[in-house]
Length: 187
Image (tube, rainbow, N blue to C red; front, side, top):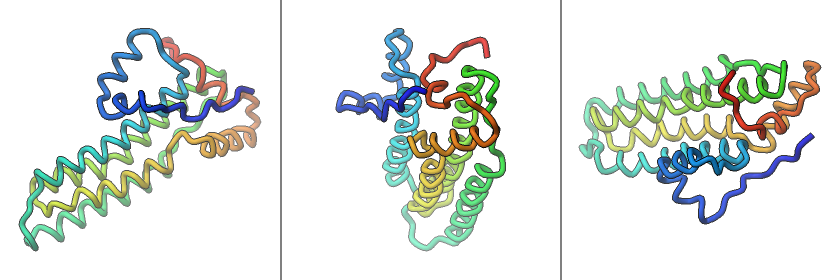
C-alpha cells in the first residue's frame, strides 16, 4: 500500500494556483508530478478561484443599499447553496473497485462532479451580485461553495474514510495507490 505523499506545495506552486494556464502548460510538457499531488493542486486552484472571483464581485456588484431585490437574491443563493450541499450527499457516485485504474477514474469522476455541484452556489451568487445585487450576495454563495469544497477535499482524512468504506465493501485495493497511478485515456 502506497503512502500518501501529502500536499507537496512550495512557493513555486503559487503562480500555478492563481494562473491555471501555467498548471495546464506544465502538465502538457510531460513533466507531470504525482497524479494525487496534481489533483490536490487542481483543488487548491478552485479554492483560490472562489477568492479571486470575490474580488471581481466586490468591484462589479450592485453597490446600492437596500434594494427590493436583496431578499430575492439572498433567497435564491441560499436555496441553491443548500441544494448543492444536499446534492453532493444525495448523488454520490460509488467507487469502482474492479481495478486500480477504474478505482482512480471513478474517484476523479466523483471528485469533479462534487466540485461542480459545490461551485454552483458561488456562480449563481456571482450572477445575482452583478444583475440584481447587493454586492455582498456573492459571498453567501462562496461560503456555501467553500463548505462543499471542505467536504470533498482530497485530504488524507477523506481518503482514509473512502478507503475504510471500500474495505467494508470487501475491496482490497488501495485508493491512494490508485490515485498515484498516471491516468489512462482508455477508461
